[in-house]
Image (cartoon, rainbow, N blue to C red):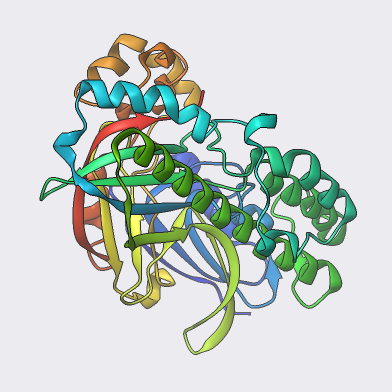
Length: 377
């Protein structure tokens, strides 16, 4: 069997632990091609910032637990300078009611869309979890690096950007199928499922369902935010400007003249002329991009800046005052400063260096600066 091919777009030297993780991945069965994005960093058995192609085997670790996690951006029909201190305070106060960080209360419990209900997960236990947790978490932001952000583009127009995933549903789907994969592959790490078996097909169906759940959840949060802006300021979104894509999935695609199973874990699809969003951090620029369709990257790019400090390192090294200094000029709930230090801009790579490293993967269409950032903690 031929050795897997690989390609790299890096913004700096690979840390030793990342290099070791990638060596293990390259040695895994049926791996045909690996593409490293410039935001690559260690996360579990497979790094974030990796696109992986196989012929038949599926590696759930190369998708991760937050299946369907992705970005959405849409223009607001207003100038960015509308967002002054008074307006920002009102938005930050009201947003948690319209877009809860963790779960809905009885008063705001959503109705799940037909696209989620009509194609339920493969196992009754997952359907039960949907009824219990999936509904109350639908249309909620989550913690970690998920956020809702108001931004200004280079022409002074106001934009909204949103980053969220499949919450508990994606984690449960991953845990259930990893347990099956470990039995089938008889491995503790980098366990796999055969795409031609019942178990492999069930996982692919559940991934597709979780991607749809996450997509619909983001749209629900966008609509809720538009409702808030309309009630507060009489504003609406310019919906034709919507950019929407996820960066955690596995699906069949054609590359190198054959059908492959492309796994993306923190890798934005960047097919030719495909629109995408690449965020920086709470205090750094973000970019709207168009894919260049680079074959060697499996038509992928970075999904963000990528961490340069782990969450534990950042929490230990970055005090709340430093976070507040780094976010000067960006409105956020500073009562959460202590809980958000692991999301400080200095915990992330330089987004401009990341964008320079992937010039052949994406074309920058628009640069945006953060104005207000809402995060859960």
